[in-house]
Image (cartoon, rainbow, N blue to C red; front, side, top):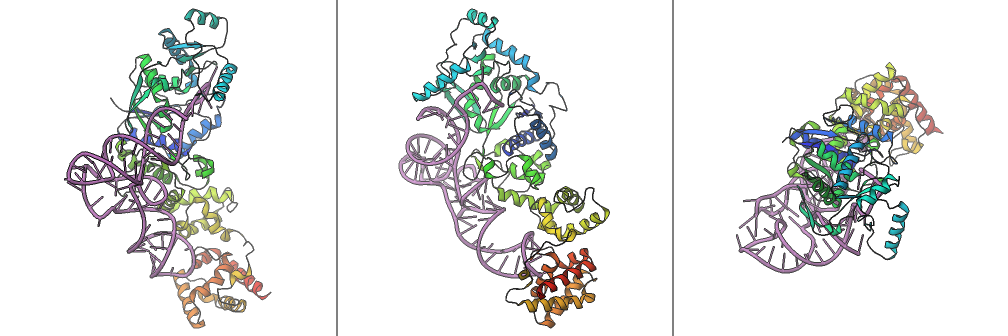
Length: 488
RNA sequence: GGUCCCUUCGUCUAACGGUCAGGACAGGAGAUUCUCAUUCUUCAAAUAGGGGUUCGAUUCCCCUAGGGACUACCA
């Protein structure tokens, strides 16, 4: 039987990096085993439903270049792929459970349940439903139902015995039935199913063969198995993925840094880096390989190499991957990716002018290997597109040097400009090297005042190349301004 | 509290029961370099603790400790 796996997000918030990893593992597993990857939208929580979250799911996977074989936008033989469009199906199955006495109607009000919880908390008892309606006769239940009393359908968890499931990673897990959440709700009073029911019904109907999901689902797994058993269905193979944690060992959350995919995207990460890094969180290929493209992972991914310990998310390593993939970019692609960020920072106009485009093209080779994030570009090249921000005069003065010396250096540079300016960067550099020798100062100390005068910073892209892009006139103006500053 | 899961350098991880416990990121030192970055060389850094099983445990078993998840008419 060929592999069928699904990613089943709930459109209640932005796609979390942990969820994205679950999706990726499902996707790679499907691809590497010649199977089918399905996207199913679990929108049964109408209170928390957010249409923007649905759009975010699409945007996230479009950006990552992940396509699903069945699901929204592409359809498929097991649709609809929105659970909100399948409610009749769940209701039918819930009824069935009641009929075969594996489920029951419950008329307990939220108020009663709330009070129950309070009392249990006061008495320090385990919190849980007291199975108040479990033994209601079917006749009475039907009568109250017909009378219009709101109800839910609950699962009858066996009072004794154990429930066992097998996990590809963890092994065999046994739970005592008495420890399972007492009679969880399957069908809510609004007619929508809870996760447990919808998930099981859909996974069965959609013929899902493997469930790869986060380990936080382990505790509710026996409950799911019980539902399969109640229907007389065979559960799929489970594989609970290790969780993604923050540096403090807790579930990765906002206080650790970016967590939603869109944040990473806005912060200048490239999709290749995210995919590569995330894939190595709880999975490895061999003893040394770090770099993988999406296409390679589609071939190489295997469940056997999964790790079961939770993984701490390391932003530093992700940053390294990001730099690696930015450096690997071809210039034209990188330029296109940079433009929106530069526009956002007000460095380029929108749309970009021809002049700006020409300049930017010249900039790319100068900054490419210096970028850790796409957002870094602005700080590197702002001085080529805009007037200098004010900088402290002291920055013009090399360590252990005086203002006077710095001023003289700049004046010399200005007066010899004809000899070094229009030449190609290497010739310019050669000239300046000779000049520095004749002035008996280090090349660095000759260039430092120039660098600050031109770029407004002691850290910049290569100077000679930058000056060429800046142009003769502006270069002169900036040197003159620096001399003036030093004279004041 | 209860149930379940997890445990190799700071972090991600590798190691048919036999390796000087390997790689990567981060960190230190150096080289290259007009600054920064890149690149290169190099150093430091781990099997949670205790018992077994075995000729031999990172690896198998048990206990302890620590960490985490779950305990909703949310997923």
